[in-house]
Amino acid sequence: MKRTFMGFGIQNTLNRVFTSAIYTYSIFFKSVGCMVLALLLFSCSSTHLIQRETLMDRSTLPPRYSIIFVIHGDSDYLYHDSRGNAHRADEEALIGATLVAERNPQAEVFIFHQRPRNHVLLFFPHPDGQMYYYRNGQLLAKKSYWRDQGQARFYPEAELYHRYHADEHPQLARLFFYFGHEIPGFDGVGYDASYGHWTFTVNDLAAGLKRITRESSRFDLIVLSTCFGGVPNTIAALAPYAKTIVASPDNLHLSYFSLHPFERLDVGLRDGDVATFAKKIARQSFDRLTEDVQTAVSVAVYDVNRVQAYLDSIDFVYDRTLTTLKGLNPESVKHCDCADDSAYVLPGMEDGVDVLYRPPRFGRLKHKQYHSGWECWMLVQ
Image: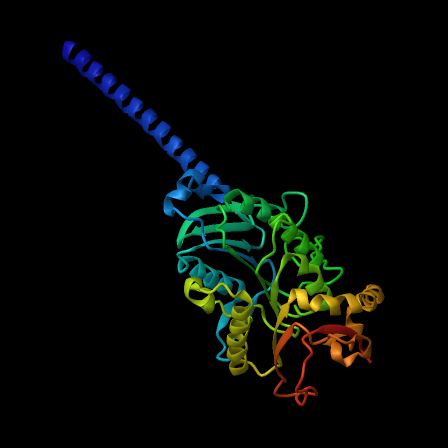
C-alpha cells in the first residue's frame, strides 16, 4: 500500500506539473498570438520614424533643394509597351522619385504615393497614403496615412510636409512634381477610384499648393506629368505658386517625364538657373518620347511671369467657355490647340512659352507642324 500510495503521489505530482506546463505554454502562445495580431494591426497604420531631433545629425547645413513628389495611383495606371510588357505607371514613377531622393546628397525629398483604398484580412481598412521623407540621400521617415482626413484635398500631405520640412537654405531651390491623369478644369468627379463622390480639379491642386507654401514663397519649378497640363486655367491656377511650369498641352501618358536629370541636382543645377534647366529637361523628355511613340508629342515650358499678360487677356473668354461646357455631355466637346480658335489668338500668345512639338505619325493632324503651347476646348462638329 505504501508503494502504491507513493506511486499515486508521484503520478499526481507529475500530472500537476504537466497541467501547469500546459497552462503556462497556452498563456505564452496566447500572448504571442495577441502580440502578432497587435503588430499586424499596428503595422497597417504605424509610422517608422526617426525623431526630428536626429534629423540635424545628418548634416550641419540645411538642404539646398526641397523636392515634393505627389504620385496619384488611385486609378487605372496599367499600360503595355510596344513589346507587350505590362507596366504600372505610378509604381514606376515611385521608383524614379526614389532614385532622385537617394542620389541627391544636398536635398530633402518628400514622396506622397496616393494609393487605392483596400483592406487587410478583408476587415481592417489599410491607409491609402504613403509618405517617404529623404534627406541627404537617406530615408529618415516613412509613414502611412489616410487621404480622406482633414478639411480638404491634400490636407494630410501639407500637414506632413510642414512636420518634417527642414530649415531652409538661403539659396534653397524648391521643386514640385505631380504624376497622374489629366487634372480636370471643372467637375472632376470620379478622379479617385476609391472615392467616387470626391471631386478633384486644378483648383483643388492649387489649394493644396497654397497650404504647402503658405503663400510665403513660390516653387521654382512645377512639373505636371499628366495629359493636357498646358491649359490656360491650369497654368493660371498654379501661377501664384510657381515661377516655371513644365507641362504637356497634349494627350500624353503620365510617365512621359524623365526624372534622370534630377538625380544629381548638385551637378545639373549647380548654377541655380532653374528656368534654363527646365528647358533642358523638357528637351530630354521630348527626345525620348519622339523615339518611343507614334502619336503627337508636345512638351512646353511656361515662364509664369511672362505668360500672365496673355492669361489675363483671355480670362473672360475662357471662363465663358468653361461655363458653357459644364452643361454639355463630355462626348460633345474635345481638346484643341488654342491657336485653332480665333478668340484666343491675341497679342502675346507666344510670349513666355517654349514649345517642343512633333505631329502624330498618322491621322488628320499628321501635317500639323505647329502648336501654340496652349490647349483649349471646342465643340465636336
